[in-house]
Image (cartoon, rainbow, N blue to C red):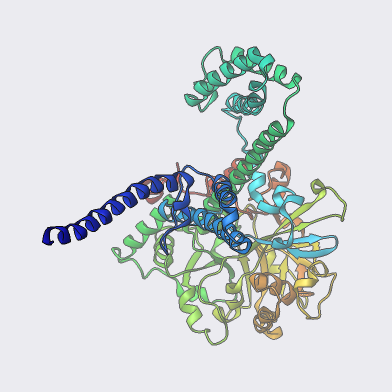
Length: 605
């Protein structure tokens, strides 16, 4: 009985073990089946989305739909819809996550938008003057958008050294556009092989050549074969969508590349014209060092600096060489240099260099006073917002002749005018009654003593007027001030100032009030100067000064020889490498080529 009673539980244990083994066998069969059906993709832990690197999103969605259809009879419709919707959202989320990971993991170089440096620019559209930023650059001339850079580019254009290379690249791009469509046509196997061979040959040649000089001797024949193959491909009926897409790509790429190079070139041009040459910087540093080594600082004839009976010339400049040329050319053509006194107002950085230069160099019997304008400004800080030296302001005004007029009929006028610093004159020279202001980019060719005999009546300043630009054309930017619309604009460069009349009219005070009122703050000094001197300009004869030698290549030699003063207004100054070569000779002849400092700093290459 004991043996029979013990057999029952043992059988039950073996029976349970057998069921367990059978369950494991069935489970081992179901798990691979589940993986084959893809059921594991529908169940994943929270917070983790599996990435399928080789499966596109469309295949993933179709795969889920197939599983749902197989299991359709066993699931309610609302669950089926939610399952499909969640699966699609999961696919979008996976792709978005993958893209964001790519963006975070791969460093992308920052895009640099190259823009030319800002010029003082006002444009006139159909009788109304508008600022440069309001004009659509694509509708106007290059000069309207980039200024004198376009003039310089046209005059200094060089022959292309890679014209053949560019032609081969165009052929290669067109051949690649036609090849995929031709390759799909069994009847065009010969043409397909020919295109492929020509493409490979040009790819090999262009990988080793950047200019026409690098090309192999027989490249012309290869180009002709490629041209013939392209012509044959064009005669075959192909898929136009692919060809159209490829050709649009080359058009867009070429246009983008041209715009990029234009902006880059204009930027580099502006950088070149606004940067002090290395040789000039060297000269300024050398002179500053020598100033503190030398002891000859008691040579100034201070009694002449405030004598109102003498001829006083004022120059605002931070350029030692430019100021020296102005003074030297003026003295060389003067009948009597003993009566000439020059006042150079410069900044603190160049003050000691200027002072040492004019103490070491003599200009016949004329005397030169160098003043630090930053020190002078401190005395008038409560009256003005001026903080540093301001050179004469140069800007351009562009005119559109009509709404429908072609861009080629537009014209651009270059003008220079007083800056903030000029309105300190009556306070700096309190004992003087009359001065002549010369810009540092002028060359004097005749005696200027006649200017001191001018009877300007009730006018405060003598200047050359430009009636092609009138205040009425700038009315949108002159605020609500009352002004004479027919009043002409005027040029700096050569200006006769009646300081007595200036003080009587309170011109400096009027100017600072207008600066605050003008609506366009960036052009406040330009527009305020025009308003300040309206109806107060004594018009000088145009033969006194000829302007434009810093931007206009078309000035005749006869006009240059007749003018008393040459004005190099514009970006292409005569001391820059970018200066107009044929005008430089009139400026360079007043440099002392034997000067030790000029030679050591290579100012006279």
